[in-house]
Image (tube, rainbow, N blue to C red; front, side, top):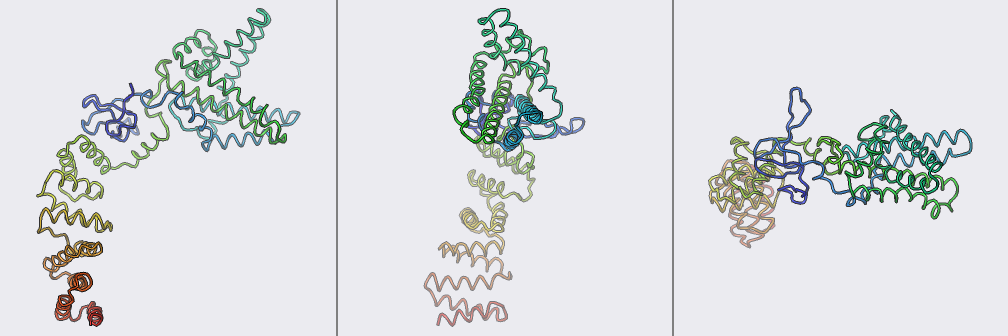
Length: 480
């Protein structure tokens, strides 16, 4: 039965921790460099137990091939195979002609096609569901596997001719049908064993098909459809096009279905790798989602790993454990990560840790103000104030928050903040501005011009040389 990540229930689990009996996706484990002689190799650890986790295998990650069919048809449209298909089809359309040039072009095109198709099959079988690179290794180095595939076809054709000659039409047709049915098994054996002898050994390929079971017959059904599709399209769809365009599209379609067929066979190897004895390791497995996880892990840092552990504690309902995790890691120092700081503040509120809210709130609010997080900063300030009426952030943060409170229409809270600033930090350069802003609120919002005038008059007497005085004088003139 397929296991899913405890903390991301829609994602298949890649790992399992035996101690805490928890299934985890790559995001929920810690990858640590083993170092020493194993430099570059990763050890995957359970963040809760600090013990290695066990890989659940490919079968717990991938879907059966019959559930993935739409993605098989999309596979050749990824950038690498699409560029190759277009290029090879264009070469065929331009160089197809009677004579040696046309023949050489055809050999080259299909040699490269089957070389890359084999690379697709081999790569997919090993767990890499992304298209192989267009490099020398995939395109033209070591044509041995292609030659072995040709040998399989030659051996089957030669044997079929012999069967027709010795057993007549019935025997020849029966052999041809069986050969067609077991051809995918031969190619699969060629990939898994790299031996032509084993690939054409009836005991081996029949045994492989039996081990895969009904899934093999289903694969053969799709394989047959893919093989016949180009012929049907050629006869009924694109034959009426201009000759060069006809050749281009017919070649494109044939290569397209070839790539799909080989990707399908590779995926069957991957799906049934345990049944056929083919080794697949986690480090070899690649698909779009896992590659994104690995990229995230590569860019990971201690803060992100800590946040991941904290989130797991929260999902387990262990709020005290999450707080302890943060405090242990930070060692009493300021928390520099905004998301972790927010998580810690929320946890302190949830657990009612009033003695810690004020201390952390001071730093957290300052971080929010510097990040210009208006709504969050206002909420944090009011929450800290409700916990401790004497709470006071630094002067700069308090001045900003007071302004944001005024912007949102919380005039009384804004006045209280400005008043707190002038009393707590009487020598701060922001005090004159605070008086002026408070006067504006009294006049413009609270409709108390007399109170505003008293504040402004006192401001002019106390700070006669301050830069704000010209603004105060103009504002008083406007008030009349």
